[in-house]
Image 1 (cartoon, helix red, strand yellow):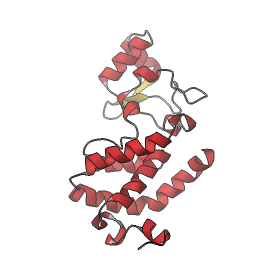
Image 2 (tube, one colour):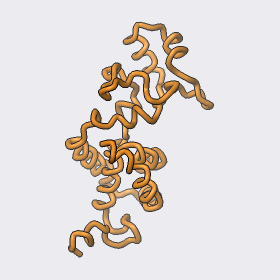
Image 3 (cartoon, rainbow, N blue to C red):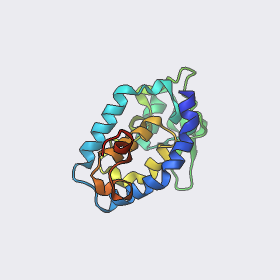
Length: 182
């Protein structure tokens, strides 16, 4: 996994322009089946991906927390909400709340989350690849493919599975040519 995580930022950068073109096309005219396709791709990827072998999201990013997250986690930690905020969170420019630092203070050495059952919504939904109206979170997805090997794989599989008009240069997906098909 370490080697994959080491290579991931470069692989994501190499695919960045291709992915931007894809998301522009998806935003302009998403296929009718995009939501169901994303759920299928997400579920398929996470049948073979064990997040506990990675934990890169918890090591490198800080999620935003909503009011319900704050209340739930504070209660779990047996802290008053204000004390929880003061101790663990920071307030951003737009008054959004996030953990003070990465890696997450609740991440264990074994990549287990000590507040897993009450973790923030952003953590529960990461990498957001099975969200409805997936095409609306292109900026977030472009960030996540450089952090999460599963998100990278899902976007690559998406490009293979979409109709020709969504693939690079409007032609057949490159994967078919590498396999000798055509």
